[in-house]
Length: 113
Image (tube, rainbow, N blue to C red; front, side, top):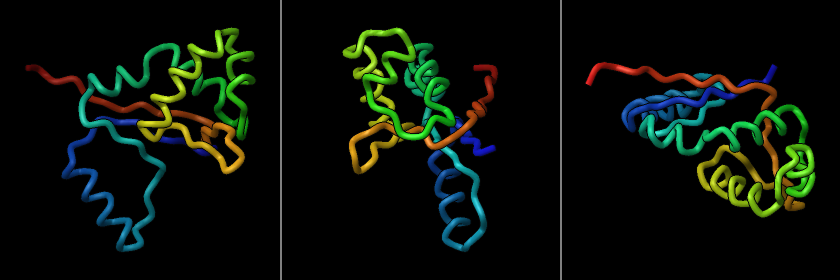
């Protein structure tokens, strides 16, 4: 199963993973957010529903995503634009949307202030 890890990571940690990748050390699919607040903003319930709908589906048109969700196309478009901007979704050469994973693992830690 192709899984992506969504997490909160420091820039130093991201740089270390990049360094390892340059040394041909295999890396898992990973999308990092700089803060927990940003992760929650991007992964709001409606956007998580988009990911759940798209997981394992291959490329989909915006209207098809909206139809599967039972939501307004304009509202889905707004959510998709944020997911594209943050690198969670991709756009294919034909203009369709792609979430190239079958599963999502979200990882973060809450610590005392």
